[in-house]
Length: 164
Image (cartoon, rainbow, N blue to C red; front, side, top):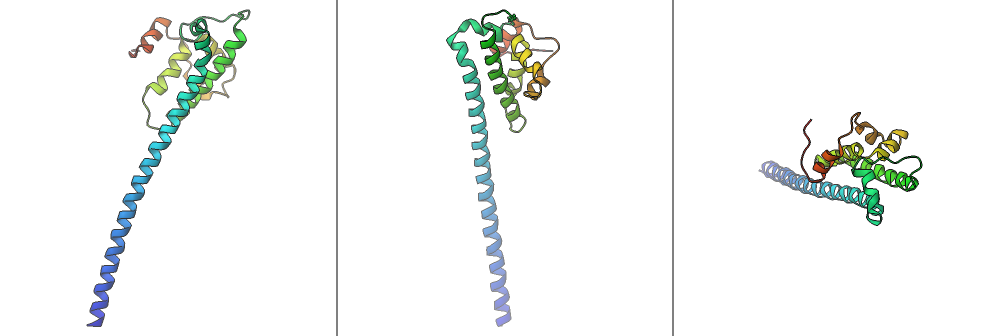
């Protein structure tokens, strides 16, 4: 009788322990999901801040925008050359970070397309990236041998897809 009671109490204890373990596992899964969402949001915010800071000089001087979005060449004697090189480095940093995050997170395809299209429409950015491919390896891998014409870049900015 006592051994049967001990067996019943033991089985009840094991069952209760398993139920508690299952509940803890569910809570841990929920917390992990929340943590992953927070990490993804932080990565997105970081990327957006880098892109915004790289675009700040373009807001101050809109004439510089053509060097990044309209395939405008920057000659060696261009009075804006040093400024444009610095902006191109900032943009390369921002895009490299975005591509790095895109390889680790479930992100929209635009995270991958924006750097590729920016490289296609910006000779100065291509030059900066190709001059130092070890600094921006993901960007360097995005450089196409044939750039997308600037008219196509306008389509990309409006949100339409390019077809190969």
